[in-house]
Image (cartoon, rainbow, N blue to C red; front, side, top):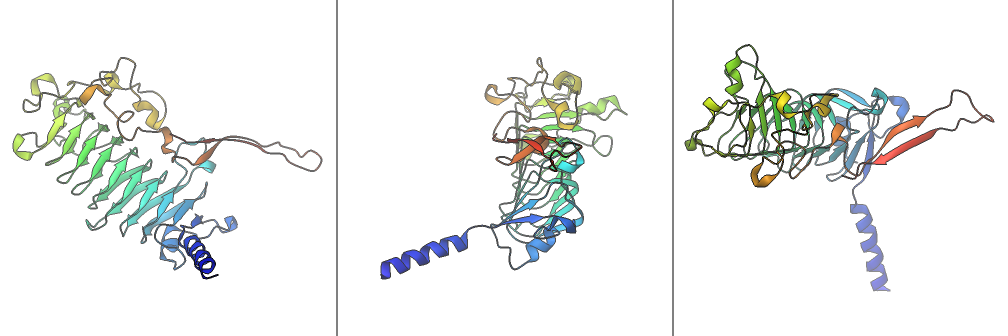
Length: 330
């Protein structure tokens, strides 16, 4: 009898310790669990390890504070209409062990302290990132550049704008395209970082010579490991200390299809110099490597609706809605 009691207690304890799921929606009619991320993570009911789901059509304004180690799952972006998407104006991370996936952050993601560990931002669309936390940023579409702290990791992102890295970081398989804020500034500033298989193209067009401003700190004394990259730097200004970069003098037209919406533009052309040019014979850019980029930043293993048929009139006093959904299993 004692054994049965202990077994039952163990089962109950195990159930109690399982992570809980919570719905977030600021629209009162939605009857979600919480109206905001801030309210959810401030609640005593929400524990570290829980999962917060942003409802389709949920648009959170202001800055949302994440004060517990939760996973936040959004709907991705560019999903065929605003009624399918969710968004957050700004997010500020105030703790460790936070995961964001499929979240559309319209403006800025902040994580201002380097003591916040195990922060992962995967398959999100973000305006810009300003963070001291040693975070992983993977397979994201970032429209206004990033500024990161020590030991940050950037994998397989499309970044429109400049990148600042603290010491000891990794940049691999990113497409970094656009213009720095000022003429003469470099697209990537890093120290003691690994910079491999990226596509880095400076599009600052006021002064044609600015295409050469791709990488800063290329002298060996800065300790950067730079190889297998596609660069807009021309042959005359190629980095002699790093001869293993795959291709120089690249333009957007050389490398990408440059057609379609948002992230679709950064697929590689059939004859792109980035194909097979990376370290070890892999493709450069976001669609190869450890965290291959997925269009529209759809979160993995989360079903999404790609078509819905809603009749204009009822039949037999009923309206039959046909919904087609897929599971993002890659």
